[in-house]
Length: 122
Image 1 (cartoon, helix red, strand yellow):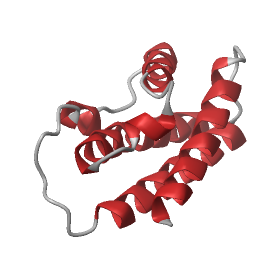
Image 2: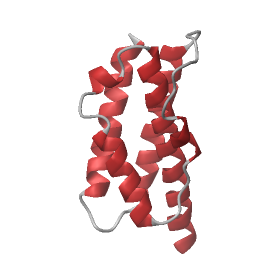
Image 3: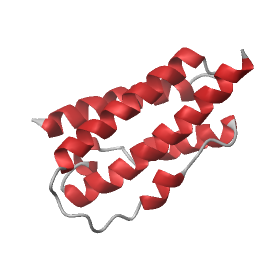
């Protein structure tokens, strides 16, 4: 059941990413939704990965990404979106799920930093 919820959460996350990439200026409320959806996706991935071995993670560097500028954040979201042309294939097996989790963690980190910058502007 959890894998179906992962697919739903990733779908919602991709919808928000599409919304952000489709506009030139990003509203702080959309960034809040991005952070929330990325956190929920990560949680459901973690539930699916409970007690599974940890090996073969190629995307571990994603989990260390942080917000630098809006253009680099948009580029990272575009890169994330491009890795998920087939969500079912990206979630097949625990190794692919671990890689997806690392990428989602990178989205969380960047989105939180981006939100913080927008909040400080106000």
